[in-house]
Length: 417
Image (cartoon, rainbow, N blue to C red; front, side, top):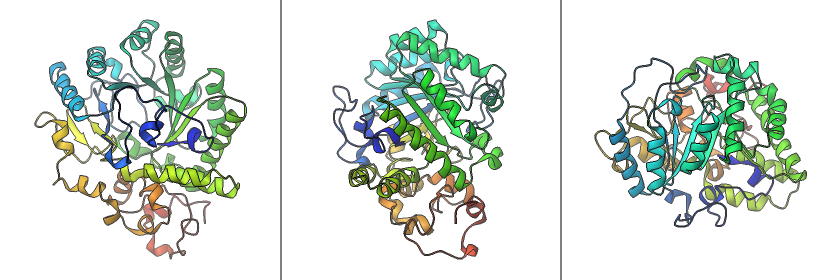
């Protein structure tokens, strides 16, 4: 994650303790602020069920009603929580499918919180009644991330179900009324990028503090909407608008927590903006970016995934590669396997990454960004990330002949020379 509010607007936001090693930014008693990003235990995205009441076109794991799934039992899930607690996992993000469709979700959340872990819910929000919101608050859920991908009909078309927007808005309002911390999640595509202004208006009108803008990753059904992915010029334009809005809110005296996710080049782009503006904070931002390391300490290090059948993956998009199963071994043992080849590579990226990512002068801040996207587009986890929208000149490279650029990467460069 790239915290726009923190890096671009110099605001203190929850999570800075884990993301940038800064004390006094949301850590709880007993939580250790890591000295180095490489020392972090992973936040675990747990796709606790495959069942979902919506039909989102970009669903990274192809969830829905009636999809085959052999979920872990309640007892098995509690055993996984026991292990994660002993291992020092800081937070469990309960996702799906739609996690609120799993009958024992609240029992598992109560067990998670009772074992000292933070519990987060990633949901489409349509099932959050006032009673559900009050239970979420009572259980001590740290945060509820509700997915919206546009306003009104734009969101409903994206979600594949009419009325999803209004029900999600009701879920947001119910959470706020109950005092539960809530925010928005949105995946940037050609379908909604022109709706950013309306989304920010909604963000402001509903007095929402946190919003995460995700870059598309071609996993699950997301692989079928390849042509909806933003070209490089469109991605730059979207980030420009997000940065401008974050600064507008800061100048208006509003506290926000605005982030972008799944493209660490956003941090470098932000840094270059500060340099161009002559902002004296640029040097401090560079230190934060390089402490975090971008992708270098994300997948396989600071983020992991357990799917709805108990298989472990380096992140929530890498479902085509399994590290092991919690049915056979504890998560902690799978995660610390010194002989697992992909984990070895992800934890020593400098020795593996190829091409312009390897040669980029900003590698220390970006870390080669999202390796699973390189794998999805190029069938090589160490290829350059095709979502990098910085030019060769910007990253300190001489222009290369187009013949040296994979077609899966070059097709995205429309509007950026």
